[in-house]
Image (cartoon, rainbow, N blue to C red):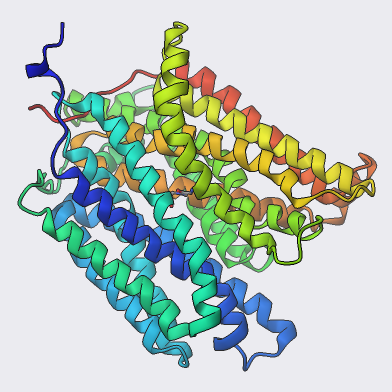
Length: 515
Ligand SMILES: CN(CC(=O)O)C(=O)CN
């Protein structure tokens, strides 16, 4: 029986991290939400109007790609050199400087782009570290509270993003760019101060020295060690990955720079990882058993992350495909389609407490154990369901029905329910499953799953430009838009089924630190 004395205790430093995250997310979503309108109506005015939209999109997506690439750099620097606290603090200061550049250089393209680069470096660099640092504050005695802390963390992200989504477009319109970009900068500075204030209370995990038995050395040994009488199929697969990556790079003119680079990265990682997993046992003589087992568990986590990527494909299209649909729906004259975006953080703030206090306890009372993997699998499937609803709305519109924009509330609710199950749960899952020396890196791979999810969207968009594919779609009797919606719904539901099957054989790890 648990007595009050040994009941798990909340680490008192958690509020500093959560308050800092709320301010940081306000600053991030605040500047991100006004970036495209600012580029279109101010910074890029010298570009002819018909070309301006494409340039603005390029700038925006290059910025987003940076944000999701730099987590790898931040994770590596923290794990190997400076530790999480120092890396977060210094990158946060750089992030503040980036915001200052945006506010100061509202008339200078070069100054403004430098600001964007610094923000991508800062926000991307700290993104996986903050959640991982929060996990470090828990140990075996109170790890049962960690999921609640990650849920609170996710709640405050959306608290920040909700107010930013509503207020920043109005600030840009009424007070101009210097004020609109300055305010997120002030919020980021406050976020840094909050984080710094907790410094004496935090648990600091030291960086790990270069390990000859780390992830990459073990992978290399697995691929390069010969086994008598056996072919080196793993190495052949790794080489196929290298050649395919080179092919994707050569095809950048067709795929576009972003899709080409991301495809090359995914192909290389996929083939090398799969090849190494086939002959990981060959590394056993070269490295200690614990190192080889650690690598196997990391590769298993990466398979789960790969199966989460379809969720991100669907989730991030609420900012593109769903807005385009909303444009053609019936709405009050004062209502902007993009304002539907604010529904997502609002619903996250409602669903997290509802799930934790009402839904999860009710389901557990019915005898169903809600593991992280069950929640994530269900979340991916529910996200697929939201796209069946959106696809059905599209079919009705294509058939000539005039539908109110408020019909989108249902798919938004389903999508956000899926998000809370997948993304909020996945943060804690990723942390708890990562071996100590690889926490920053694994959290970065979790963030990278967002990039890969967006890659599937880019590739789907490239493929529907091909006349052969369009012809096939026409034969189904659906518009390309409706077809794509059902395609993505099926993509997520298939991923959910594979996720559920794979999860059955997944051995849960416990990498919380000892007391
Ligand atoms: C995508 N996220 C997480 C984040 O860190 O921004 C959301 O919270 C979207 N609702």
